[in-house]
Length: 188
Image (cartoon, rainbow, N blue to C red):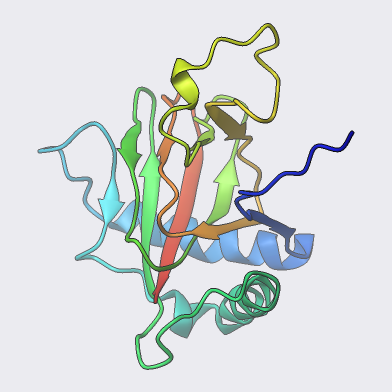
């Protein structure tokens, strides 16, 4: 007898060099403090309009992203539109902040980079691509064939990449949370 897995979803994990991670934090955090928090939506904070120009400030971080994206593409064969620019935005989460379940498109690659994080920060939760899994009754909730979601612990200096169609969310941040990220997309 043999059981084969036919519908895996690729998720890349890559930790950058700690010296570069420290440099990124030392440049991005003061820039975040200069931005005005959008209090119309207190659930989470995205800085789209007041973009921090990471490509100008930290080209070596962009190089790490490109390296991770190139490897991810070589393994997954996900096609991206070479004429589309890398889209990115900064997020800064405080106590109680969250980001509801969403996806970024049906084609392309999405990612997140943790500028800084502590244990009180909300994790990144990835949701199964099988919408019927929740209806299967199992005796072991850890069974990988019917897992509804998985949580990725926040970690300074970590890059996570996944197909843009993958639904995900940021769990609620606790008291004294520190969670600053740069999210990004490459469209297919």
